[in-house]
Each structure stands twice: as C-alpha cells, then as structure tokens.
Length: 437
Image (cartoon, rainbow, N blue to C red):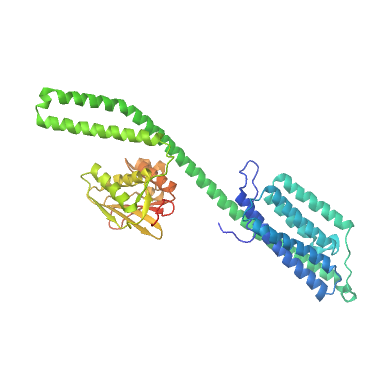
C-alpha cells in the first residue's frame, strides 16, 4: 500500500475492528501534512490581499494564527515517533484546525468570506477519521462557528479602486475555494477507497490463513489420536514377534529368523515415529532451537532421509557457506522431508536437492523427473483442498507451505521444461536465524 499525500485511514465502521495505534499515527501524520497546506495557502492569500490588492487586513494577527499552526506542526511531528496517538487526540487536532480557520475568517469578513466553505472539509475529515460521537462534535463546533461568524467578524474594507471589482473578487474567491475543496476531496476519497480495498484484501487473506490454521489444528488432533491408537497394536506386534523369535522351530530357520528380526526393527521404528508424533504435539517449545551450520543441517537432513529411502537415488548439491548458522527447527527438517517424499513417489530414480543463498535468501529446491503437477495444483500450491491429488501430495505440500510461511518464507512449485517438477522453498536469512560469525 502506498502512502501518498492525504492517504488517510478510515475510522472503523460499526461493529468493525478498532483502528490500531499505527493507523492513528498515520492519520495524524496526514493531518499535519494537510495543515502545512493550509499554512502555505493562508500565508499566500494574506500576503497577496494585503500587499498586492492593498486590502486593509489585520496582517499581524492573521500571520500570528498561521504561525501558531506552524508551531503546532513542528511540535507534533517529532512526537509521532515516540507517542501512540489516540482517538481523542485526532479530535483535538481537527478542533484546532476548525479554531484556526474560524479566527482567520473572523479577521477577514466572517461568513461573507468565500472561503467559509472550508468548514465542509473539516466535517468530511471528521466523518471519516473519528468515531460517530466525535464526528457530531465536529459538526456542532463548525455549525456554531459558522453561526458566530454571521454575527461577529471584522468587516473587509476594500480600497476605492477595488469597489467596482468586489463582486468579481468574491466570485473568484468562491471558485478558488470550490476548486481547493474539490481537489482535496477527490485525492482524499480515492486514496481512502484504495486503502479500504487493500485492507479488505488483507482481511480476506487473514481469514484464509485462519482457515488453514484450523485445518492444521485438525490434522494435529488427528495425528495425536492416531498415534495413541497405534500404540496398542504396535505393542501387541512387538510381543508376538518376541515370542516368535523364542520358538525353536522358527529360530532354527535362519531365513525366518532374519525376517522376524527385520520385522521387529520396523515395529521399533514405527513406535519411535509414534513417540515423536506425541512428543511434537505436546511439546511447549519454550527454548529456542539450537544453532547449527546451515550446510551441516541440510546434509544431516538428506542423510537421514536417505537412510529411510535406501532405494531412492538422491543427488544433493549443497552450495551453502559453512560459516552460515541456522536455527535447527525440526519443522523445517520435516518440511524438506515431505517435499522429498512427494518427489520420491513419482521419480525415485532421479531426485536432485539444491541448497544455496541468493540475495540474503536461503533457497532449497527439490527437482524430479516425474509427470509433474496438474494445472489446478500449480494454481493453488499448498491449499488443503487439493489433497485429492493423491497420497503424499496435497496434504504434504499444504503442511510444507504452512511451515515455510511460519518461518517467513515462500513455497513455489513448477513443472520443468524437460519433464518433471520442481518445488522451491525460499527462506529469508533474518527470519530463520542465519548469520555469519
């Protein structure tokens, strides 16, 4: 979202979210810019009328009001860097602007001054920036000020040579006021609409992300329940296999004994996986992950994956600097494993994992020679609704995308020109704790 002149943030609607302190500060900053425009415009108008048209004006008093507005601006700007603006302070700022405008109009003809229409600009600003009650305060104050200027003001005394031009000068002043209010309102309202559209898009993105987080919670609950349920049958299998190994007839057959030993090892591996799932679901993660060499972290991740997939042919092109250190987050290791699992299912004989750093971003890419991704999957990589693509694809990529997003990175998938697919994980160095000693 850009921040142009008068890019004010609208007040919250009824039932909507309250504006943050940052948004209040941004609104105050824009009001300061608007006040600088008023200072410049008023100063130019006073000097032209007094010294070019020779209209007798209380120049000293009018310049004093302009100087007061300038001083308030100079004092307000540095406070924004260390002070959180509140709704009441925005109201006071608009009341100050209404007060300075009222004084200037009092010193220059009152309600007969064509620039009295500038009160409407203050009403519009209040309606957009303030709560409903505060907006009505602005309406009431401007109404009372306008009524007061009808009865109390210093009349303008035109010089004799301008008496015949008074009507034309007032028409010119009215046109200038209309043009000024029109230009400011167009700039103001169009920027407000743009900011609201950006905010709506952001809210929609947050809602989509919340839905994905809810999906992750359900997956976590399912994994925890499955792990608990699997504990009993795995324990039963372990006992049965131990009994089989003690059977003389089975122990006498070397082939059967070897197969039973292998089955026991696989059961132990399953039990270890279940234990890890339960530990991951229940752990608090209060301590920061250990810092390890980035190259070593990926090398160990690849080595552990190869041990579980001895038939897969994986080539690892590790171009990371040994001096770089990374927070060894188990979630990142599991995310890389999921990508490798997806690729190994469709292309076990030709897998490539590359890791490098470009422009302060760590890039981990996995390429295969399989059939590639379907077009609908590429359009929504990592979306949980795409789990129908097949085992190990939709849900796996969704989990990878969630982990990468939590780490401040992005996930991209593409089909390779020569055949196969590539999944690329990009992680900013700052977000994953990489640093050079």
